[in-house]
Length: 117
Image (cartoon, rainbow, N blue to C red):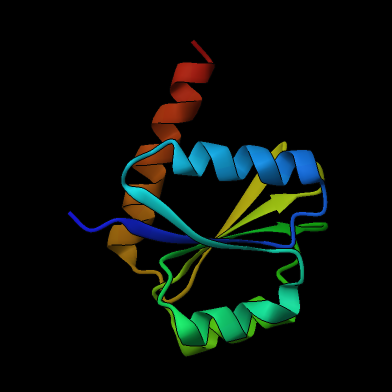
């Protein structure tokens, strides 16, 4: 199985960015290809290297325009936005279909069932 290639970008809290980086790298099936402080560098990195997942800091669950542009070029990239201090996340999936929706419901639905027990 091929590793998931992950790009971490624009997480303003250094401690949160460090935690995300360490947690991702602790999994042998995830490869952090780069960590950017400037969101404007995302397109350049994506042109140089293929990525599967983009993790970035966002405010008020609004996807930055540069990320919308990236999704327009490659709809296979999963974007995970860590909102404000990282206690909330928004997942952006482009060209989502019924099968993907069901996978998300099953995966995240099980998480909420476990947490509410």
